[in-house]
Image 1 (cartoon, rainbow, N blue to C red):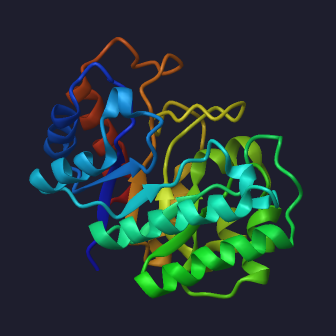
Image 2 (cartoon, rainbow, N blue to C red; image 1 turned 90 degrees about the horizontal axis):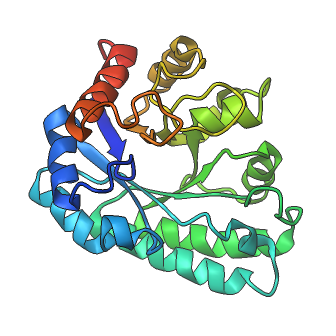
Length: 263
């Protein structure tokens, strides 16, 4: 089975024009790019629909997009849930239009999220029904509280309700809890990045202390198709200010292919 190797578009180097960043992602070896599906970062990245066109222009696929997590708590709030689900449904339709198989959602927003409840289940169920109609996965990301994932999976049964496995979140937020043991049968896409266990740093693999060998063994055994990096060259990275955008992307690609090995 052919796998796809993707890089998150928001990886830093925001002084580099969006099309040049796209071109450098492609030239580093990636065949896919992952986009944020909101307008919060248009001042550095440009319009998401234009970015998709640039990706296609440079022969990159888009298999995963990320629904904005800025107000993830709204899905559990009765006064906000309907409008929030409507926005997610619109994003599902966008995914179908551009051929992105996975729409990633957060279940919580930091520590301010209400406890999971029926309101959220009703809202997410609406999104899942639309995902089923459009042939898109609603990929629930593991964040700080895996019990939210469990509650959603227990109360909504659908092959289109899947998992986006985030390696960094597992390491810094839920030590001792294996996301893949709990929800690995639902895996459809990934956010792969590293940290030192104290915070969600989104570093390149090798900059932190995550043991990736058993993780990649599990991912390969699962038959995963979409390996997507979600690393950032931010101020906490040892590479920040020291290498070029193209050099950073080449390191990112090598970090992924070294871990995957021969598939």
